[in-house]
Length: 77
Image 1: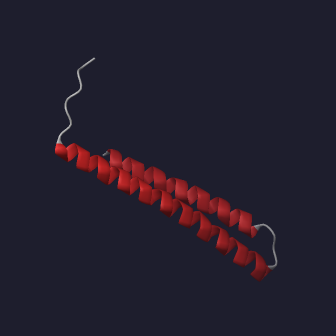
Image 2: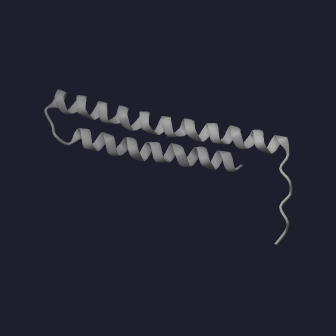
């Protein structure tokens, strides 16, 4: 096991930048799911169906998880 190297100033700023980026991802995830729910609710009312709200909300959840994974993979490069 190797001893840890002291952190440099650039490491701290990069860590802060990554943390800020990931906090933005959380907001993006919430907004994506909320808008998917609103779209599904509107389509339910327009076409007098009962399953579109659930369907679009679930699709928005999958989309937001995909975007989070994509962002985390980009940060690891």
